[in-house]
Image (tube, rainbow, N blue to C red):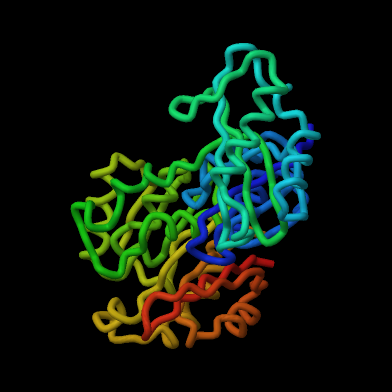
Length: 347
């Protein structure tokens, strides 16, 4: 059955959370149709499997819900009429406890007061149900309203994201720490953008302290890592074993001489900035050797998700090596560095 769904996403980046949802669904072979896409909110038509897949894999998901109504007019009377017409009380059984929460995205609809809408929508749900009651502390069902620039989206929460599950894997909580290591949310997003799948080979050729490998292993990939620096290989091993994450192998290897073939996905953060000096080579020297080898390591149709500074244009190298550049996302790090996440697909 195809449902109207909405995904309330992290607002920390304008494009990555939405792109991650699409990549997860593509990786899992789940069809979907985009209804509307804005920072913080994605509305789709898809089956229930889409909810399970995104909730299981994304660390940038707030809530996913079954969309019951959408009102383009940000006026309280119109919103309440749309919610009443959706008849949300029909979804509740006698004795059910429910709550209503209204979220606002980037200040949209500033004239609307969320507490007033929550009370009004809660009252109409209670009046339209068979004995359900409001319970703000321990509800059986949670109804969500989202105020965005597109209007008011209303629905029933089906799944909640679990970003806190990665808090224990933050870089400074690992036995081996390196200051350039990505935080888990971004590392997991890169794994998802690579269209990795559980039970299939995933490769990080510049694995460093193993942050990306940790996230790949956590969703069930057969993770393999390599790095030219033996200290990093040892550190990645210590981190993976500390969190009891299974992996296929860790090897010391030059990324221009990858010994792997048939990987489904690659996600990696090559050395630049603080990581590069020990290699005595700049990224401009590393990438011409690495990108063609990455293509050889991937199976046909496989994806490479790679981080690099905005000063480096990977598109010509990707084209020459037999890749198509399908996505590009800029991530501001600090005044001296804007990181780009590029996603390449092997032809």
